[in-house]
Image 1 (tube, one colour):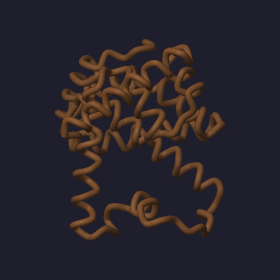
Image 2: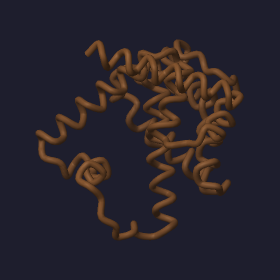
Image 3: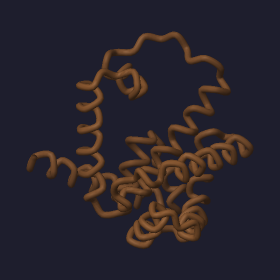
Length: 188
């Protein structure tokens, strides 16, 4: 697998896959599955669970790819699905979630979309889409590092392993991404 995925190539494959092209989906899978497996293995620390997570992730992707609005967001979308699948598997293996209290914002993040009232749902979707658009406006590698660090909450060492980059390079991309996001937020 290539260390740095070609975002335009992946976006074009995602676009074809959205239209039902099974060959494009197979190529998407082949281009991204090793990255997803390394992430799942790093997160779950179990080869069998990592394989299960990858399988479940791509089943979800296959079922829902037609709903992907912007093929340029495929990698971000895939990473989010993978993270949620891994989180679900980890929580499932631990049993029921611990009965701890969460502040309102944390509880809202954990609450499924279906349980929110329409106003909360709209605010949540609009805010997430705005943030994702800002992150995805960054150069590709910076966007991926920001997503892995802040959305997937991976350590720098794990990110460097997943992306096949030196830790110093990951730090530089993260710092540049944060600086650019601050500039973008000041403009809006």
